[in-house]
Amino acid sequence: MINSKNFAKRLQKVIDFYSETSSSFAEKIGVQRSSISHILSGRNKPSLDFVLKILSSYPEVEMYWLLNGKGTFPAVPKKESSILPQASNSKKTIEKNKVIERIVIFYSDGSFENFEK
Image 1: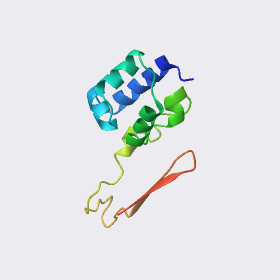
Image 2 (image 1 turned 135 degrees about the horizontal axis):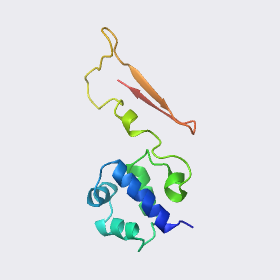
Image 3 (image 1 turned 180 degrees about the horizontal axis):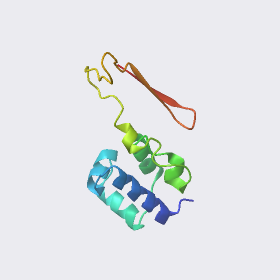
Image 4 (image 1 turned 90 degrees about the horizontal axis):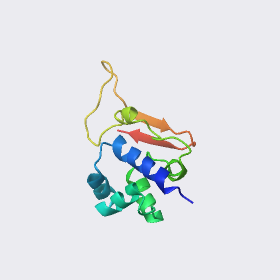
């Protein structure tokens, strides 16, 4: 059983981490603004659909952490996420004549992401 009060604290942490308002967060995950308000206030408990929408929109959020507070958040620190290549055709150079061709991020659960130009 999810502790609604603690879940609300973790949800608020996610919202704050991404510098979202409750309204913008609700829009991004595709729920009514009142859903966020009711969960944060403890009036309602989160549904499975609600949790899955968060995880789908914010893949850095670990399900186990969101549901019961165990694990880490974020899975990829915010500062490191800025080094990921943007969807563009431009090449980013580190030093003269050096071009990033590929970035691989390894996660603690054994999974990884591969970014190539």
